[in-house]
Image (cartoon, rainbow, N blue to C red; front, side, top):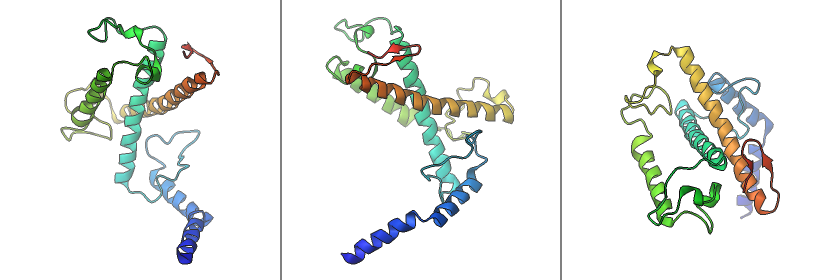
Length: 209
């Protein structure tokens, strides 16, 4: 037991050793400092050390996950500000005549006493699962970069851009994705603050109710 405790202490100390951390950070910096997303004024920033001693395959996997989460958050943020701005889908959400705007905005629409019916939530989860498994992926193997889901079908003029323009547009998407992740997190925090009486009057959408 004492040996196990001593080993644990030594391992913890080694993890926080300045020389080792500096070497790992330097290695990651030299390997990925020119990758897409490394932009001024911050430059290469990896405070959690997730890129320490990783290979290119692992980096591309992390980039793919970052893009996926960013795209989801962009949709989530737009959904928040649009519905809270008073715009909802027309018609009814079920056969009982409940309109879309009769349900609350935000997380309360799926969790809580006034949430949509359970079958509606199951349909949403099923649709998202279908997209994840069969649509939002590189089906044809023609992807140019992580997150390229055109699959020889959707293009929107991408092939007419030169390499510089493509890189710029990918950078714009990545920046918007990062901003959306922070934005939807902020809205989620404000929703919880409302529950303890700290209602904030936010730009564009006002107070979250």
